[in-house]
Length: 333
Image 1 (tube, one colour):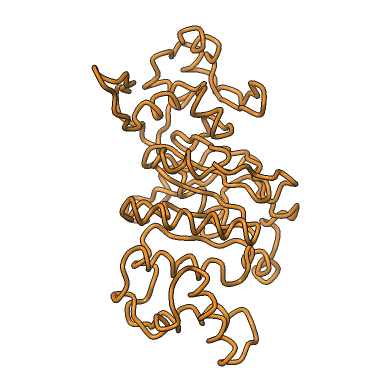
Image 2 (image 1 turned 30 degrees about the vertical axis):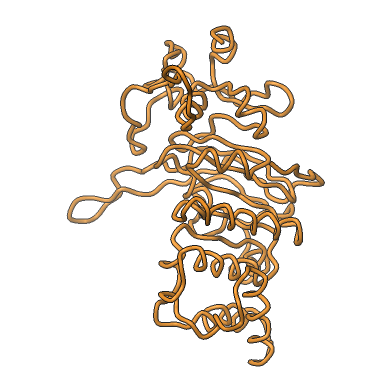
């Protein structure tokens, strides 16, 4: 795991919420909302890799898309380089959009199968620069070489590449405009393990070279431990815990984090490995539980958990957790 240089905050979220309306009936009236992201407050430091983890449906990808502007914020504020983005017009936001890019989970779905790779990458420069055709082609070839591809790949189509090569193309497109922040949405989950290692090494090299900041969304806790400086755990749209990767993996405080980490495959000789098995299903985000969102599955849940939402507490060394019974949980260790 690399060490981030926390010079300053580059991205800040204050009470960010993202709700999706549920419409029904003949008139398609709003009958409720899916609360995908619920009151997330977060500060991202320049040059770090921040992992965002949690079960499927916890809201981590929606949070990434909301930060990028692909989804509108329902409530709350997003600041990029101390500039609040919500109050800006589309034209005013354009320079900030260039500074934040995304690498998608499925590299093939994010490419036009009828378009040559060179043309697809050139589109970025057509839309955002005044470079000539010759200059654009030179920039694209430079990008391809930057991510480990060759000049001859310029004229090929997406189906002529392997999954790892297509993800390299996605990375090339993400870095084309020299962004400051890149959101990696399950960027290596569709790749073989050996290819994952190559792509992660490429991302680290690019970060070192250009000072990039990553929001690394993933369900692979092993990859997150290797790649990220800090890790935020989400559950049902809420933040459960936030700490450095070392602190989180060696001393998890939230019962949900403990259960997640216990699910990481680890060979153990001479017996069964201890694993925390959560009972029940994740609640419906359209009708979330009162109080702590995790109380319906938590082994430590009490009456206060059912009634009062836990506060976001700093337990020391910038290790934050939202749980009423952190002290009680530590006594059981």
